[in-house]
Image (cartoon, rainbow, N blue to C red):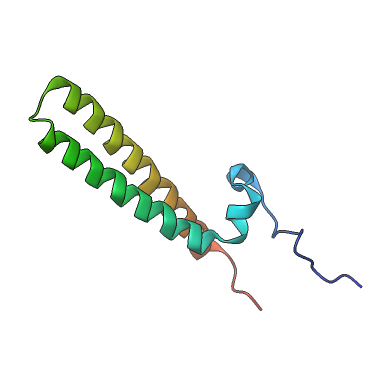
Length: 90
């Protein structure tokens, strides 16, 4: 009677409410995706800096990609921390 269907998600309180429901249901997968995207963004930042011959424009784009990569790493780490702090599934 009270079976959990696909439209219900686990309890989200506090800062977890800003995570979209799709991502909250698949935190492990989304954490790994965000970390991979962060690695790609850091790689793009390094390639942009080296390929741009260290010009001002290359520094600006490189900084953009590096900040984007750092944010993706941060969110991925946050998702992994939520998974580790969750009570064990029964």
